[in-house]
Image 1 (spheres, rainbow, N blue to C red):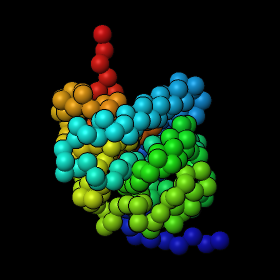
Image 2 (tube, rainbow, N blue to C red):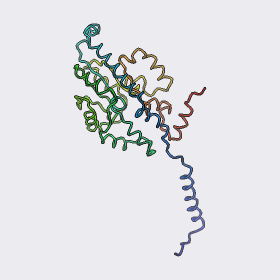
Image 3 (cartoon, rainbow, N blue to C red):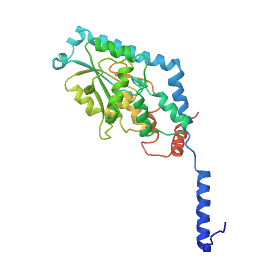
Image 4 (cartoon, rainbow, N blue to C red):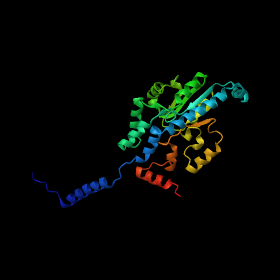
Length: 275
C-alpha cells in the first residue's frame, strides 16, 4: 500500500494528538469503588446489621403501643386527639434493601447513575429490610395509615408499588406513596401534607433528612449539633435504620460538591481522624 504524504506540520500535529490521547488513557485514574465494599458486605453478610434493623422496628412497635394507650392520648392537646394516626417511612434502605444494586456498581466499577438505578427498580427484586414487614403490617392492623415518602423519581412509581407489595407490605396505595417530582429532594413539604390531616406518630428512615429539614445540606459539625439537639427524639418519635453504603453522611464529607472519584477519595482520606 502506498502511504499518503502530508505536510510536515500536519503530520506532527496528528502524531502529537495520538500520543496525547494514549498518554491520557494510560494516566487517567480508573473508577475504583472498592471503598464501598465494606458497607455493602455489612448490609448483606453481618448479623449485626439484621440485629440493628430488628432493634429499630422492635423499638418502633414499643413506641406505637404506647401511643395506642388511651391514657397517653388523653395527655395530647385537644386539637390532635381525634386526628387519625400515621407513620411516615422512607423506602430505600429503610423498608427495601437495595444492596444488590450497590454490589453490582462495585463489581462493574460503575458509579451510581440514573439509568442503572431505574433498571434495578424495574426488576422489582429488592427484599424487605428485616423487621419492616412485620412492624408495618402490625401498625396497619391497628388502624394506622402508612405513608411512604421517598426520593425515588415519579417515573418509578409503579415498579416501586409492585416491589413493596411483592416484599410483603399490605395496603400499599398509590396516593400514599409520595415520590420526588421535578427533581425536588426536600421531604418536608410532603411530610407537611401528611401532618395537615394526620397525627404522625413515628418517622422512620436511614438518613437524617428523613426526619427534619434542619439536617439538609449542613456540614458535618452542624449535623452533629442538630443530632445532639434532637437527642430526646431518637428511639421515640424518630427511628433510624443503619445504612453504611451511602447517604447524606457521605455527601457531607464531599461538602455537597460534584467531584470526580479521585477527588472524593482525597476528601475521604482527609476526613479520617487519626491518633
